[in-house]
Image 1 (cartoon, chains in turn purple, cyan, brown, red):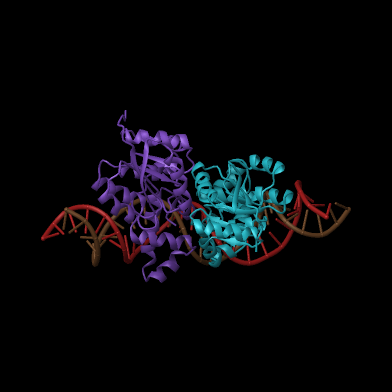
Image 2: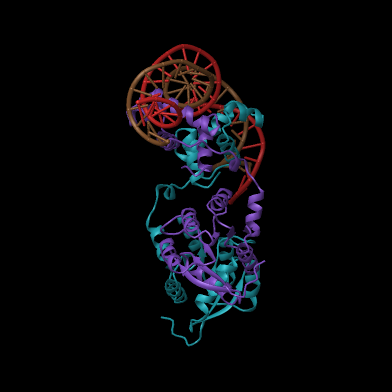
Amino acid sequence: MWQDNEKISLAIVDDHPVILHGLQTLLKDNPRIYIAGSFATGADFLAFLEKKPVQIVLLDIALPDIHGVALCKKIKQRFPTTCVLAFSNHSERIMIFKMLQSGASGYLLKNISAGELMTCISDAVNGQITFSSEVKQIMAHVTPTDLNTLPPLTKRERQLLHLIADGKTNNEIAELLSLSVLTIETHRKNLMQKFGVKNAAALIKAATAHHLL
Amino acid sequence: MWQDNEKISLAIVDDHPVILHGLQTLLKDNPRIYIAGSFATGADFLAFLEKKPVQIVLLDIALPDIHGVALCKKIKQRFPTTCVLAFSNHSERIMIFKMLQSGASGYLLKNISAGELMTCISDAVNGQITFSSEVKQIMAHVTPTDLNTLPPLTKRERQLLHLIADGKTNNEIAELLSLSVLTIETHRKNLMQKFGVKNAAALIKAATAHHLL
DNA sequence: GTAACAATACCAGTATCCCGGTATTTTTAC
DNA sequence: GTAAAAATACCGGGATACTGGTATTGTTAC
């Protein structure tokens, strides 16, 4: 258990002023927390960290300059003792695990309650992995889409995916790219194999589910 | 111009505690604003309005009990003088216009700055339609998808859409629904006509763009 | 009750796709 | 520099989809 008399030094990184103020309000009256700073960009926060490390940071994933996953990695590389708590609207399972994989100590959705927020912060500072209740539910419910890990697509395949989605026929695509129709057929075949589907309609649906269109 | 000495009476409806606190913090120090109440559900707010009308309400669109568009209509029906400012994360053009259509005085995205928020509130109270800067941009950029208004689909067509997206062939669908293959072909043909596409792949893409899958 | 629409069904012909292979040439990565 | 991966290309045949019609029978809405 965390027992120190000192306050927990905490930083907030979020480019939404409303969220920023909300978090500050919820946290500033807490006697155990000291808000070391609030930042709207990843660069600002990294620069600050160099001068003044903090114990824990509430990190939005959608930042203007850098993706939350990348920022989290950077933070943990340079400051392994700083706890990163993802604080986001993204409720996709894959996002949660990407953040954890990148060293985050937990994942909170922005609809978290004040009480829960406090619990999660102290859990994280005490070295535990922690989640808001909704996140726990998301993690518990695996959908088939979550499971089927897609083999990586090649550039050509991604390109074809878009053309197929636009309703282009193999012939049209072949002409457009100055390739043999047979080549296009091969690519289309490989795409369907990778997605585990048996026609173009299902291919487009699956690709959409994987945020590839 | 709004000139009254009295403060603007304002309510907030949002089920995210962090957002709620953020708005309160940003607004409570403003001498021109009186926060009449904060609510997490549409029902709570409607009940409150009956007792104590407010001049303006900041309304989240994603509420647990009722959709923002429906709530806005109800508010404007019973209390036409109450200004509704949509306050949301939804950045889709169609959403903006649905809210305006339902009587909203403006649309703000949650990444709004403190200054902008104040400007928008006074604009709305002064009877003007108002938007946060990002919303203005969204409204200015029409995409083809926004324009093509889809003819309404029948029940059967919606059903077929899903089966086609799942990769089912006409034969499979016909068996599944105990219908003639020829009937399925007709439905599929009508679907493609309605969406203005010429094959199943494009159909699924278009349907997805219209949030129908 | 009647007009409009939805749902059903039919047909013939063509276009396109999908499957099962195999195989060569570039590119990329260590 | 060499091994792996990507991109290219080929083939035949069967399956499926798409086009362009028409037409009958429920079902709703005024």
